Amino acid sequence: MTPDHAHSERRPSDHRPSDHRPSDHRHGYQAGDDGFLDLLDLDADVLEDYWRASLDWVRLVAGDLDRPRVFDLGAGSGTGGLGLTLRFRDATLVAVDTSGPSLRRLREHADALGLRDRVTTIELDLDTNWPAVGPFDVTWASMSLHHLSDPTQVLRRVRDATRTAGIIAVAEFVEPVRFLREDIGVGRPGFEDRVMARLRRDHHERLPTLGSAWTPRLADAGWRVIDERDFLIDLNPPEHLDAGRYAEAWMGRLGQRLEDGLDTDDRHVLQVLLDPHDPRSLRRRTDLRIHGVRTVTLARND
Ligand SMILES: C[S@@+](CC[C@H](N)C(=O)[O-])C[C@H]1O[C@@H](n2cnc3c(N)ncnc32)[C@H](O)[C@@H]1O
Image (cartoon, rainbow, N blue to C red; front, side, top):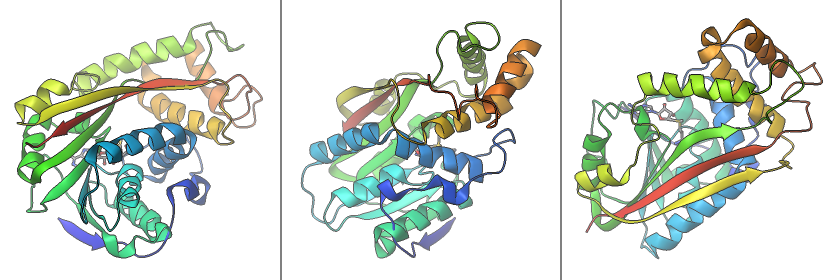
C-alpha cells in the first residue's frame, strides 16, 4: 500500500491527453500505461456530457454534506473521483488503484484542479488488501468492479467503511461504446459487429461480471439500492475534435487484444483504421458516430 498526496493544479475539462500521447496505439495496453491512461482521459473529454450528467446526479442524490470524504475505487486517472470532489464544498478524496502510473496521472490532474491538499492516493489491490481507509460519505466505482475477483466482498467492505446514510455509485457498461457504421468502405460490411462478438467472448472468459446487474450484488453486500439510470451516449456525428483519437485509442486497445481472433480480411481493416495516414482511418474519417449506454446504480448505507 502506497499512500501519496497530490501536488499541483488542473480541471477535468483541461484534460489534455496529447500531453501524454503514445507513439503507436497498436502496441499493447496495460492498465496504467500511457495509452490506457490517454484512453481514460479521452473518455472524460469526448464523453464530457455523460460524465457531467452522471456526476451531477450523484451529487444531487448525496445532498449537501459537511466536508464529505469521497472514495474512488479503481480510480484510473481520476475523472469521477476528482469530479465529485469538486462538486462538494471542502470534500476530500481517497483514490485507490492497483496501478501506480494511473495514480500519478490522477495526482497531476488533482494538482491542475487545485486539489493538491485534498487528495490522497493509495496503490493497492482491492482483491487482497484492505487498509483502514474510511469513513466515507460518497463512493464512486466506475468500470472497475468487473475487474475484481470478488466484487460483492469489496462492496461489503466499502459499506463497512461508509458512514450511515452514505452512498455508493456504481457506473458500468453493458456494451462498450461503438464508432462505426455497417459499411465503412473497406473490407466486408459488419466489421465492428464481428469485433464486438469477439470481444463479448473474450469478456465472458476473462471478466464474467462485466455487463451483469449490480443491484443484486449491492443488496447482497448490505446496501439499499435507491435508484438506477441508463445514460445514453449517442454522438452522431461527434463534435469533439478528439473523437477520432478516442475511437483510435479504443479500437487499438481492442485490436491488440483480439487481433488473433480476426480473419485476414478483418485484420487488414483494423490496420487501415489504425493508420493515421490513411484517409479511411478512425482518426481521419468523417462518418464516425459514438454510441453506447452506461448504467449508474445508486445505493445507500442505511
Ligand atoms: C476501466 S478502468 C476505469 C478507471 C476509472 N474508474 C474510470 O472510470 O475512468 C479500471 C481501473 O480499475 C483498476 N483496477 C483493476 N483491478 C483492480 C484491483 N484489483 N484493485 C484496484 N484497482 C483495480 C485498474 O487499474 C483501472 O485503473
